[in-house]
Image (tube, helix red, strand yellow):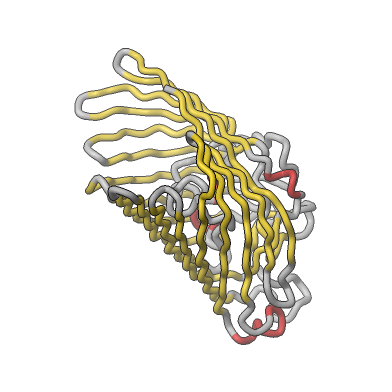
Length: 348
């Protein structure tokens, strides 16, 4: 069996307020998978690439987004970093045992057993061209350069554990940054109903941030995804919580609720609400540097697919985002900025 999936967006991004910016960029992903059945088991290969590095090392504007760096010296603030060219290169195997199966996953680049599916892989989030503000609380480990996972699945319950390289990719988006395994994670998933998936995970990330190499983070996540297939539509909603507990620093939490509904295979409605505690919005020397702030955001969007041929869909869409934050940040961010994106999307 072989399969592929992918998308490419051409986006005009206008982030409001004095710290906002406008930029036209493209983000994309192409995933290839192959699986071969064996006597008593199966073997598979997975690969994923992205053309995101073409947008430049500083990524695209996104108010209140933080994480990683564009130059190895200064943190990215109010910008979303691009993904690396190589997002996944891994092999899988499974072996049937009584009433279940054991499985393994080994990747040069891949995703350890920590967090819900990454936002570009879950149906509720794939059509939103903007990364969640909670990305570094939930699924930032989805590109780990070096990961090994083993697990067991039985009757809708999956248990898995990973050892991996906990350092997030640096600003050099075309290379492969293999390091020794220094981090670990464990995840339990359960499908109590055909339309409901639950997961609970925890892990220790050793030195995840390039700019804070001596800080380890204990991360915990929980999520629930509900998916409903109807005669002419599909609807999925995901609710997720993530908690980062850095070494010698206060812990912080992030909450996410997102939904997507495709009607008649042509109209896509989607939305995302988040509440995130951030302490890295200001640089040293700025007033209130290091103080945590609770940021709320609400995004609503729509896409109309005006062209379809085989598996190819081309659509045009838009997204509007508003924010809530402490009044003390008005001097930096203005009074209630609104951001919007207009985009052309091709999807396989």
